[in-house]
Image (cartoon, rainbow, N blue to C red; front, side, top):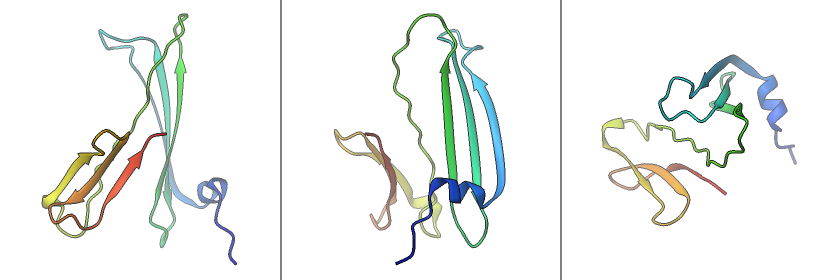
Amino acid sequence: MARRPSTSDLVAAVRHKVTWHYSDATSSEGVGLKVVQKSYDGVPPADYVLFRFTIKNSATAPLTFYAGMFADWDIDDDFVDDVARNGLGWPLMYVTNEGGGVCRGARSS
């Protein structure tokens, strides 16, 4: 039985790595968050993108917040009929097409 690749294996086999640095410093409602986002693009024929977020509270006061991410997946060949929905009370967001065929989504724990 083949071993499932680890995150380290996937990151080691990337074509492109992009790092973004951003914060809420310019917001009138900023609370002192600094974010580093690293994105890793898989080497063909692998079809994946990995994201790694490091979020830092640079303020002196403790902070409670909930991080989330949403992606705009293009479902099948016709992206025009794609719709996003939530999990109706679940911590879940997903994208499907109007016909309700293929779904892609993310669930928070």
